[in-house]
Image (cartoon, rainbow, N blue to C red; front, side, top):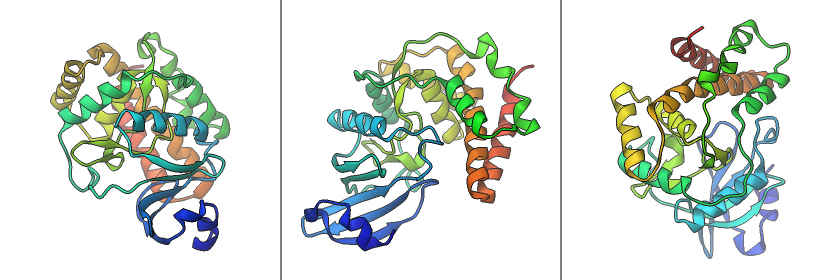
Length: 270
């Protein structure tokens, strides 16, 4: 889709100059400069459903987070195309300028306190959704199917509104802002923290500090539940990457899958 065609999808007062932005595995993004201001524009992946993304749910979660001051304001959205137009924030993401993890835990705890009617992200169902599309499942993936049926990796929890993809690219500034709500849903706060611990490559002591900061901020996650969710992060990452590799044949997805499986091997017991 060329720039003119993309701009024609927006309301007329948002027509302006598009500047492509780097980054992101599945979406395309631009800085949009208009006579009325500067905005961030996203065009979503055409494979959203296959990847387990529901654009209507993404929009509801983002709007709820924006009302709570956790995410930038939505100016325009068209979920069918994955179009999203947001405030432009001049602050740098945490890939460029890492911030205070205590501040991030405060924001995450606040998110988990928001009311939501979004459906539950069932991790087993999400994994099954990926596996179904990957049939026949490669032996190195099929090996782990029995592991995730273990009760020890499926502890009970009280669902809360989760982002489910908090990594350095999706955290912005000192506030910090939370971006990219594609996988938002009700979920287990322990899985949210496990995603963060993995994405920021936290060691054991740093993981303990993360959990303590979250609980001090009003959250409630036990060490046992947190540890039980760490393998799930690698399992879903491996399946997601395998699916992306299947669709694109890009080597970076194969490398991501192999890295996740290597981490998973060190986390699980047979």
